[in-house]
Amino acid sequence: MSMVRKKQIISCAVSFLCIYALPEMMGFTGEEIYLTNSIFLFVAWIGLAVLIWTGMERVDWKDLRANLLALLLAVVFSVCMAVGADLDSMEYVVFGDIRRIVSICCFAMALTVIIREVWSCMDNDRGNSSFALEEGYSRGRFMVIAVVLLLCWMPVFLASYPGFFVYDAQDEVNEVLTRSFSSHHPLLHVLLLGGIVAAVHKAAGSYNLGIACYMAFQMCIAALCFAYMMDFLKKHHVHRGFRIVVLIFLAFFPVFPMYVLCSTKDTLFTIALLMLVLYLYELLTDTAKFLKSWHKQAGIVLSGFFMMSLRHNGGYAYLVLMVFLAVWAFGKRHEIVFRKVACLFALPVVLCVGTTALMTSLLHASPGGKQEMLTVPIMQLTRVHETDAGSFSEEEKALLYQYLPEEAMERYTAKLSDPVKVLFNNEKYGEDPMGFWRLWFGAGISHIGTYINAWLYTSYGFWYPDTIIDAYNGIQRHTFVYGESSYFGYETEPPGTRESRFALLEEAYRRLSLEITQQKLPVVSMFFSPGFMFWLYAFAIVFFIKRRQYKRVLTFSIILLIWLTVLLGPTCMVRYVLIFWFAYPVLAAMVFEKYTGFV
Image 1 (cartoon, one colour):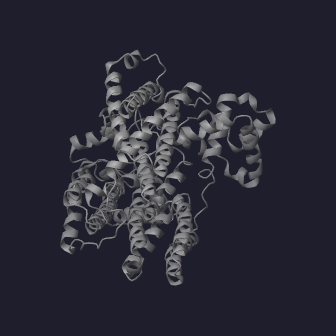
Image 2 (image 1 turned 45 degrees about the vertical axis):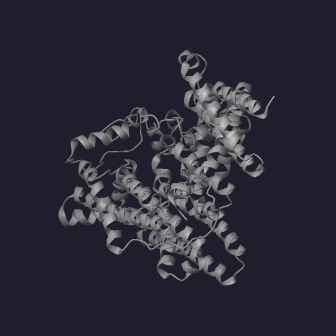
Image 3 (image 1 turned 90 degrees about the horizontal axis):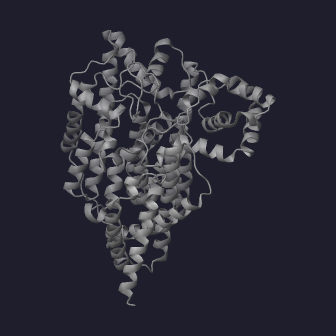
């Protein structure tokens, strides 16, 4: 038998195994006859067989390193799809299912071939050669880009006037109005948002105008930072056509105006994180030039400072990044470079700790509760109580109710920890933290599977592309009750009131936020999914490792570190991983450098 015929047979067999595994990977039970008894899967089998055969012909399978990386990515993706399908359909994972394990292996086998073929199409013959950067935009062109973005966002601003005032905004403004501060929310954002709203209200007598002024301020910051990103792409030789597509993406893809016009601290946090990513890449690729530019050094210090000051998890991720950068700087074996880089990345930490301590002291801010850090163990204990309350002795129940009262247990919802953790007894935990942890450990010994399921179910939307973000389903807000989707908060909470100037556009954003409108659009729906966006980044970073482009890996490591921190958060929301959208133009330009011209 000829080698060609063997490859054809192998391609058909691998393709069949992948198609056979597909219903299992998507969480179907076998009763969906419309899927299994469908000509669609037959056509998919033929198409996939051709694709795999082509891949076997054009891919250099002697590259063992690339094969192993592709296999690793394929296996992890396949496991996540199978686990996510279980969680989406049953709210728990079926552990040890032999049929599921076989399906994962079959699917991963075919996916490995596809990944290798895609990589071969994306490989750039120029390798890691360095090129001189182009001149950026002139100051006038730079400002034109920023103004164009502002003008494109303006209709949404008028449709949602005074803006999307949601996600803790009311609490933050009330802290300023009542002069009663807490470190639960980042004080820098509390003073910024609450200060602008309160100052404008005092001067003009309108909360709406105050909220609108904050939105205008945030819009301007976002427009200037996106213009800097466009300038970054131009300097790196990215083709004009791609930059035009990026500009359209920034101007009109709904996630951008949603959050540019949203009061949540996550927007400014993400803008600071985006600037940190851009400055970090510039530092890594031309260290000598970067260290001669005082404004770039100031930029990386300020972006690091604001990122840590606007979200607590930003600080945790930044500290790990410092370790990575220390290893990189030490590897350059240049004492002066090491010292300068160390100072650059230590200074934001000093500024953040110092300003936070100063604001806490001057504002007499009360300490925040421990429940944010204990989200996962709180949900694990609550889920055990929900599914097997009899496993607790009377003494254990009495102790459990001291930390989490029975009312908290009655509020349990698998996807969202907020209704439970809001009733967590911080005083009791402060008096006896070890009692809580002994109780947690004891319950976990006999309920390991329940603990894993409890954690996965609050976070699986960050890595499972096919789920719908609906954690707030049934929760009452000021002007609506969340239903089939809780993609975005949408409303204007008190003390603001919605005064829309474009009712049709407002309705469009309401549907995108609270209905499954975008999920009904094949392919397009994926670009609204946090899980899908994560896999785009994971695919890109493994591709960079395969090409030994470690500076790019280090650049985007901060984004993956942020992603790791949100896996321990209260639920899955777009705002927690907004950076996936904000930084994607840069990632795409690098990954597809063969076509975009990025150097």
